[in-house]
Image (tube, rainbow, N blue to C red; front, side, top):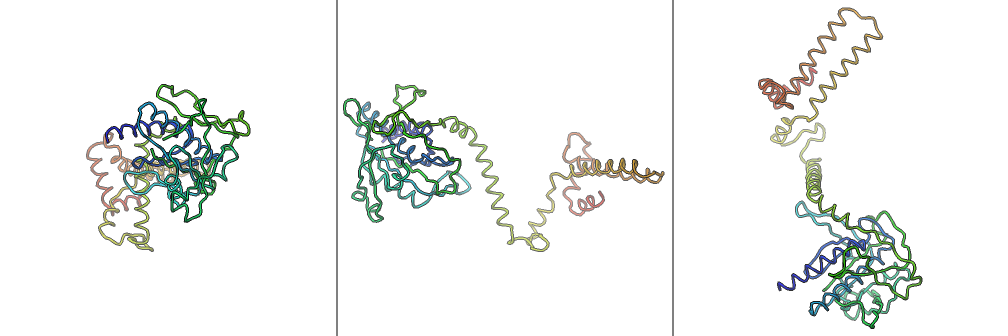
Length: 369
């Protein structure tokens, strides 16, 4: 069992690199099953071709590993195109997942496949433009689910090597491609024509451009140019902690708003029905209260300047505005003391904190301002 886990770890690590090359998003690994999807989060017109290319590269990789390690390892690849709903569930241990009947069909396509072959559905076949040669797959003979629903299947014809050997063999795999019906698919990209598939071997450097050319393509000179997503994957891993923190805050905020709306508050006064919640909320300080007082001082100062420029001034006007500005400045300093405790004296900070946590004093303070 230990050797099997070690082998699967090496294979799946290689598969992750292939997924980045062929624009696949790995959804999960279940035992010896590798689930990935093409077309999310960025929509691609060539999602079906990319998924098949991914499958061909993977079976070639497993074939190489089998020859080198002399182990009896086989692979089934199932590809289906359809509509999916993707998202994150729960509050902890988040994992992006997809759900739909088409996801189930993709799983059954793998179960009804043949080791060493890429098994595709009629839906995927309709998304292709002659990039691959296919032959009848007869998936219904091997899977009751496919037979009961009348799903036609095909097997991708794999090019032969120089010695007439097939380039594939191979651990169980499921690949799901998504089509334009999904509401989550955006940023479409046009397909450039014929496609190339490939796989790396341990001796090959990662920079080598990997490909397997099908000689039956309509135009072998036309190649599908693939963007490298490795950099995006690395960035996502580096920002995983920050993303988890933001998701946690967003989920808690959403649940708090939904739980309190209409159930625990008075619809007219918006006060909490629970006295304890109302008391706890009443002692919460507005984070921008100090900034509001500062803005009030600035507004009053500009008001004084405008009055002085427009209307003739009397001594009573100067006295009124001076007293008002001084009082407002005192209120502002007292409000800022709790925000900057190191700048102001300790007694003033204590007084400011008492104002913040005493509701009637805080309200009176705001009214006076």
